[in-house]
Length: 120
Image (cartoon, rainbow, N blue to C red):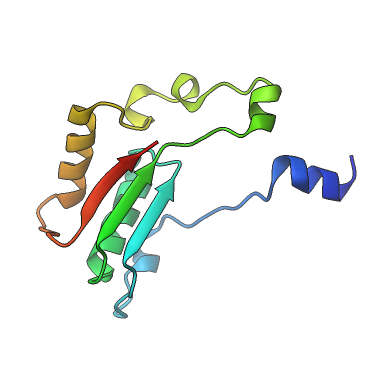
C-alpha cells in the first residue's frame, strides 16, 4: 500500500495534549462553542473541558459526542469502544450518567453561561 492510500484508509494519527496547564494561560479565549467528538469521561478529558470552561468566558455550549467508528474500521472488524473499554470510560448513554458527568464538570464552580449537550 502506498503512502497516499495508507493516509486515505487510516487517516492521520494525532496526539492531542490533554494537559490542563497548557490550556491555562492568562489570555481569555473567545470560544462560543466547543465540541469533543469521541468523548469519554476520562480524567484527562474532564480536566481539559473544565480548563476550557474557565478560560472561555464567552463559551455558551459544550457539545460532547460519542465516537463514531468509520466504515473502514467496521470492515476490518474493530470492536466498538463500548466492548474495548471499561464501562466507566465509555460515553454516558442514560440521563443519570450524563447528569453525573455534568456535576463532575461543574464541580465546585458555577458556569451558568455554559450549556452541556450530549450528542450521538
